[in-house]
Amino acid sequence: MADAHHLDPYLVLDDWLAGTWTDAHGQEVAGRTWSADARYRYREILESWFHYIGDQVWTAQALHIAHWSETLRTKDGARPLHPTSRRRAVSVVRSYYRHCDEDLGHHGDRLPARRILAGPAPQQAPAGLHPAQGLALMSAADRYRGPMPERARLAVYLLLANLRPGQAVRLRADSIRREQHRVTAAVPQKNNTDSATAWRELPRPVVWALDDYLPVRTWRTPHSTATTGPLLLSRNGRAIDRVNTLKDIVRTVAAGHPDLTELAPALSPDAVAHTLSPFTPAP
Image: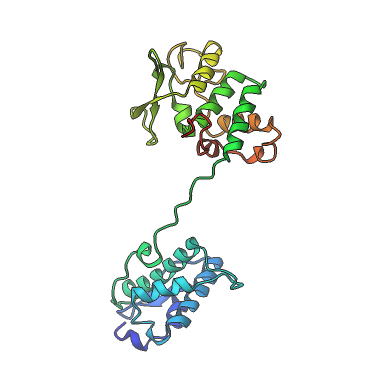
């Protein structure tokens, strides 16, 4: 690609999306095979970019791409493009220029990372329940009379105490330490290793739920005993399943409260864990 300024960017795009092109040494190259959907989306994005940049297509700088991405709008033009979609569009433009540089031999200026061109990825706050809904779920757990109600109440209470689902399921019976004025637990940390724990004081309502559950906890050797093994157990003495059993507990308990009936079928343990805890003292 001796003189990029005389290349037609649209023809380069055609060859790239077709999956065949001639490299800098005059050799025919077979590249990636794109799906029809990818070809359509990439062409739409790059034609928007070509229209914006015009004759500067081969001398474009990072600031041009950044500004172009800020101008992108939804198809109806009613609102700016969502930040996630903007980042995808920037990725397409970067991929096009990387193809020109690496596959065609046009060694232009190396473009910076996508997060610099389009801004950092938006941080979405985890969706939790409203505080009143958290209180409703606590009430529903107190009144629940389905299978293994003591276990269901404790499981919901642990989530409402802001333990993540994986932490609640991996909590062990032998990790509970009782002192004169408080009860603490070695809570597994969120790195999926059993050895990493941090001691946390359990709110008094959680301790009450724990004390109601322990006498009926369904321990079975060799998986668990009365004082060892996972805290929340299935009927076979193994830890409950985080994906299915914990989700079913949360949804079944929530379905018993009239204020939660509509959201119960889609309620997740993660949403409960991200709810403002009703056990947190008011400031």
